[in-house]
Length: 303
Image (cartoon, rainbow, N blue to C red; front, side, top):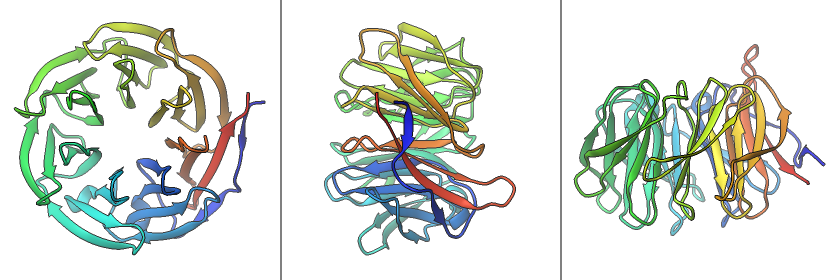
């Protein structure tokens, strides 16, 4: 069987656009950066029912603290990063930064949030103990996109869409130590880390998906069907789900090239995706381009 819906399409009010989407599988929650709703969307991961929206601002990035279940939010044009308790729907702490925030990533071992500058050339480093900015990483080029943290080395990997490269940043000096060139990829958007195999999966808007070792060696190159924005890698199943008008699902085990399992069209506005590692539900959200109506829905793949 192909990719199929597992929940009904849930309306989200107010309407408007979305950005990054993630799942806290341990606590059964889906979190979406709902810029149109001016905050953090909180939904039930079993049903898709919307539980609330926390008004942190026109969000872009979102990350979960696995120890507490608290959610870190990159608040877009509000130029700040917040910590939210999704149970009480309250903002606990906020720190201002010098620019608009896009993607964020969290290193739970070092207790750091990395928040990249939307269409910019900086990463803001936030210490979660004091909730203060402790450093600024200066990037080559501009248009910083997706960001990943290696749980073993704590290196930071930052897509630079304008220059078709991945910047590798030291967690001790907060400087770019080397660049991984991705010349076959135009406007490299999604970036995922397969930590077990030390691989980076990256795709672009020109129909190319590539796998590089974290050392920078090109491992595999495959065709990507259609457009792509966010991707999410589920190591438990070896699934790479990518969004661009729908869902493209690949299998990847670190020993051979990614294989396309199935593709489903959902809606033109779909560009965010997150996999629930516990249930295998693939979540997407979107905004109707004509009406602005917002929707959240879960899918799964049944081979």
